Length: 282
Image 1 (tube, rainbow, N blue to C red):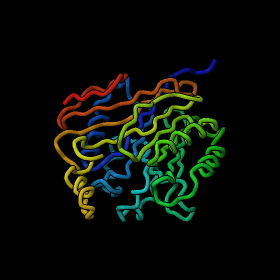
Image 2: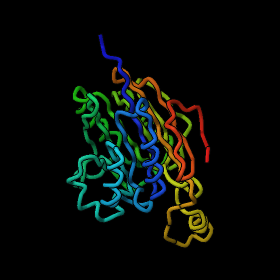
Image 3: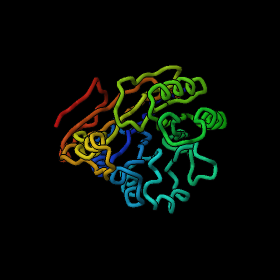
Image 4: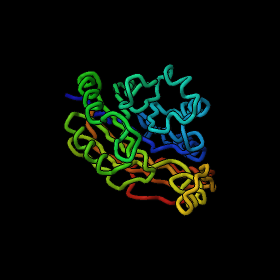
């Protein structure tokens, strides 16, 4: 008889600046032992002052117990990424960059008795020019079949239709979890179809009082006067955690919960076992 022991995967939306790092740190430290996830993934392309990932912040986030870092188009924004991305063991950059690009677009992890593959990819709609994610991801998934237990895809893309279309397509090839990132706005469409967990965008972790994690006035002024200005990470004393928790049994998803919490930096709520909606406790 097959072992039906649950396997829990926790995926954090784009960590944005120091507020996002604080939010994830405190959230992970508050998890009860019985609810502790078996595998933790976080998108980190905005973790260092809103753009890119420094080595210092990489080590900081790694110390919190995150098993895998995914990224996106901003992963190159801090130059020191070029010094450590080749030697790193848990960071995944978009797989559909040219083959000569530094880093790895897919990694396999052994954790809690499971082999977990994580693939990262960029969308093509309203995004920098990249290779087709359709052919590239499908080829990678085909190679992984039979060698891993669960395949996770982080599709870093702008257009919701592109995310949903690719998600449904990949569900036919055995992907276990498809998570959209990049827009920093959590969508309320978490679901399971074709034995695959899905959400169009998991949202972001950071300050909820700005514009997608960045300071309000700069964002507004850029729209009003079209003059370029340096973005600053928003900081108001409140932090937000956006994530999804997916429960697998026999390597298939049986439950997906969308997590959306906002609270003061000094406040840490107990880790929820289920979530029926947004909790704006402050």
